[in-house]
Each structure stands twice: as structure tokens, then as C-alpha cells.
Length: 375
Image (tube, rainbow, N blue to C red; front, top):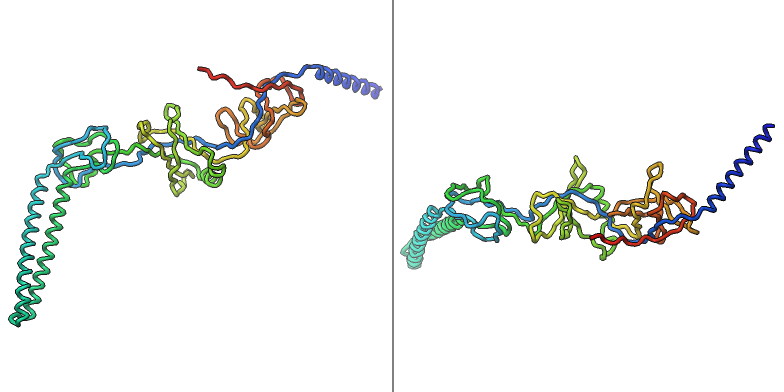
């Protein structure tokens, strides 16, 4: 009796499966939209925060003491190296130059007298009317007077340098900021506070922090691995999330890893003709991390996750039957995933109609056309 019941149950199950299979075979294939994959060389980038730094900074400080009598620049203007910025009252330093010139004249006169005495002493020595000691004394006097002249000339040079320093000039070309002193103010040589600051803003530097591990990978598999035709320029995003219209290049890396954070500071250089980038500004940099040959860009809408969180894609296989592929994703690029395994060039990845299909189901694929640009 039990055997008969079991046989009857089995027959019913097989009959139901046959009916379901027949219904599935009679169901028309679902239309789906696909994108045909293409292999290409892809530069992998990462977005890193950065800070803009002036490529040159000169703090204007006095090198002599005195009263500021004149300011000769407009705040916020562009100055060139050598332009006069301030003048210090030169009266005291003019007097020092005059005194130094007098000392030089006096020392020269003493030297001339010592030379004449030496000449006379040499003639007297030749006729034995002067002793050897007298000749030696004359030579010593001549050398002493010559040394005194050199000291006087050095003092005159120093006085002229101090006088020249009463005219304060720009040490670099760039944009000068606010004047931090006024006419009539007393300034001191080597004072802590600058009179003004000049910053060179074209080009500018952008300092970013990158993990040491990423830097090692970038150097080992860097942009050169893909050949000279790959664009390896560094792109910049401004604070308002718009793209900067100039590209930069990596110029230097700090040869040290921060022990607390494990990052390395990289310095990038960007042209800044319109002075859009200002020192201290925070920006975002698209830093190249390496180049992948024969990578596949899979639209993100065609990728889903299984129960374990692994990325998968539905692909139209032979006889237009749906297959599921496990993907190896490296990174994202815009609206695509950069995939190195799971799909290959020529595969048709389903991007629309996924809710109506299942693995093993027949479909009617249609290639997706490019969406028109909305004005």
C-alpha cells in the first residue's frame, strides 16, 4: 500500500515538472539590452586630497635699521625681481660712506708715503748709507700701510652695501600681498615680521598624501608600462567640483614615510596662468596608480552582487542563453567598472531587462545605442 502511494506521488511530481518545462519552452524569449565588451588599455587612478602651495615664496625683510620713507608698490600687484618695494632713510648710511671714503684716502696717502720712504731707503742701502735694519723697517711700514688700505676699502664696500640696502627690492617675481608696515615705521635688520610677502603663482605646486603601498605599486607598474601613447597627466578638481582646465605632472616625492600615517607626500606642478589656484586652497587630484592592459569596462548597471557580496554579471552566451559570470573588479571609472577577469572582449553583458530573466533562459539581445547628449 505504501509503495503504491509513493509511486503515485512520484508520478504526480514528474507530471508537474513536465508541464512546467513545457510552459517554459512555450514562453517567448525576453528582449534584453546588451553592451558588447571591448578590451582596452586603462589607466587606473585614485582621487586624493591636496593643498595648493606657491612655487616660490619670499618674505620681504629689511637688512639695515631705519625709518621707512616710501613704499613703491601696489598691494596685490605683480612685481618683478629687482623692483623697488620700500626705501629706508639713507642719511646715516650716506654719512658712513663718506667717512669710509675718507678713511680710504687717508690709508692711500699713508701707503704712498711708505712707498716713497722705502724707495729712498733702498737707494741709501745700495750706497751703504743705511743699515739693513732700516730697510727692513721701511718694508714693514709699506706692508702695514697697504694692509690698512685694504681694511679701509673693505669698510667702504660694507658702507656702500648698507647704503644700497636702504632700497629694498623684490627678490623674486610674483604677486605681492598686503604691506605689513607703513611709511614712518621703524624697521630693524633681521626682524621677525616681514614687511610683505611675494608669492610665485605660475606655476603652483599641489602637495598630496598617498599611501606608501600605492606608491610602490605605481612606481613598479607605472604609466610607462603601457607605452608612450597613454595619457599620464594628472587632473585636478576644484573646490566647486569643477575640473581645472590645466593638467599637471608629478615633480617630486618626499623620501620619507610618515610613521604614524604610512603616507608619502607627493608634489605635483600645475600651470596657473589665470591664478585660479591660490596657496592654501584644498583640491582633489586624480592620481594615476598604474596601467592595465586588455581591461574590460563593464557598465555598472550590468553588475550585481550575489549572496556573498561577490560581483556578477549576466551574459548572453551561445544560442542566446543567459549565463552568470563572476567578475574580478579592480576599480571604478566613471559609470563603469574596470574588470580584469570574468568577461572578455566580444561578450554581451546584459544591462537592461535583468528583472525578467534567469540563468539558462533564452533572450533576444539588442545592442544599446549611445544616449543623445541633453543640452
